Length: 67
Figure 1 (tube, helix red, strand yellow):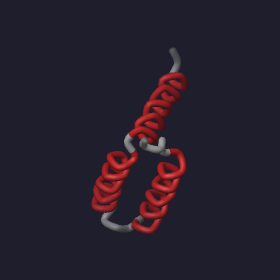
Figure 2 (cartoon, rainbow, N blue to C red):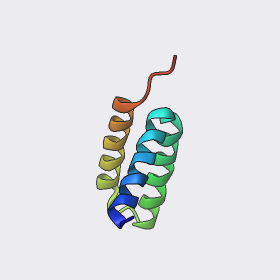
Figure 3 (cartoon, one colour):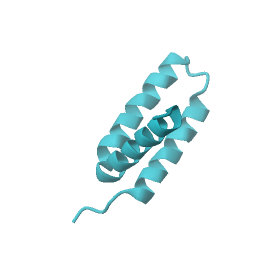
Figure 4 (cartoon, rainbow, N blue to C red):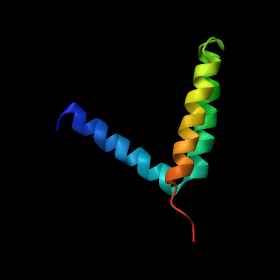
C-alpha cells in the first residue's frame, strides 16, 4: 500500500467521523485552532480562523442527520 492509499484511508476515516459526530469534531477543531494560533504567536490568526470556518461549514453540510 502506497502513501497515497494511506492518506486516502485517513481522509475517509476523518470524513466518516465528521459526518457521524459533528459536535465532537467541531470541538476538536476549535481546540486545534487555538493551539495552532498559540504556536504561531497569532501571526496567522486570520488564515487559521478562515480555515476553521470553512471546515465547520463542510462538517455542517455533510453531517449525518440524527433521528
